[in-house]
Length: 246
Image (cartoon, rainbow, N blue to C red):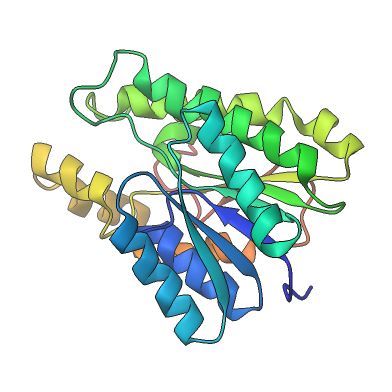
């Protein structure tokens, strides 16, 4: 399926997996809404890279925990590119300091669901919503994770469940939902932080899983799922799930 003139919102796409995914999909002809929370220069650099390669993109500052910002993302897609076809829910968090106790659940469940619903209202027929998560979150009810990451994992699993519960309503609009999950990703801020708190954590996961994906490798897998021939509600376990599925 061609992505020429298709429009994609990617949250958290000013760096890391989101930025790499944006570049890949722009290279396939898609118009990209690069969403960032606070680092405008970083987001503008992603847009410039896409434009220099002949693609189309726009940077939009948005804190997805704010309803008006979530709506602004959807509006930006339509105002800049004439429509919306895909939404990649890549942004997540919950380990930040100084945030309210319920911040992880607000960000990883409530805000994801709200943005998905807002996007679905304007999305073209045949659109797709992709929720990016981790094996540590997807399997949190079966396999414990590090204490510092547990609130994030639990909230991301709650977000996944909330989105999967939307599948029937999305189907009525001919919109599909796909979940993309991977183990710890080499080079991400979260992995680096957890490895700092628990020296050797990345090496231990790499040994158990057999391989940990890099940012670029995982971004390629996320990008593939935009047009992958899978049923709505599909959960893609990137690289398998060694150590999680017994």
